[in-house]
Image (cartoon, rainbow, N blue to C red; front, top):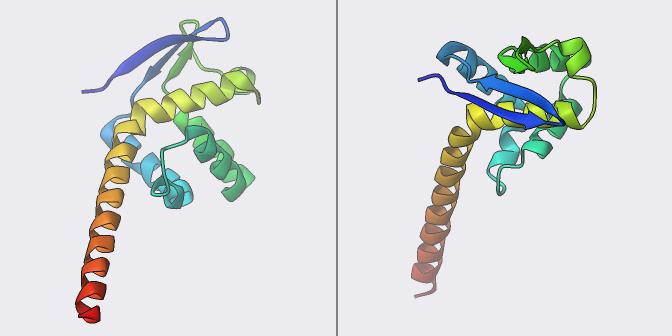
Length: 135
């Protein structure tokens, strides 16, 4: 089921709709190819994810991705106008953060938990092997 969330950012009413399956998976692939390594290192930090997108994508790829991420955003009951609504600043960062949270938070936390479990299992197996070698 496609979800929508509405809230206020900097005095503006913002509504965000979740991506459909195909668009969501395509964007997730692009995002994780850039910020994926950071996901397994601790809690998901959406601000850091946005920073990595800026550092690792070309200008054209970054703008293309940002436009795709904000295609289902409405500001004050109007479709988001990328050129005027997404000027660099607090509002644009908060909108992007909310888009990422609505669409990918559950996925990132699930993956993060799986990675932590796998690392814990590997550490336990290593410790067991080391103790067996010492005997």
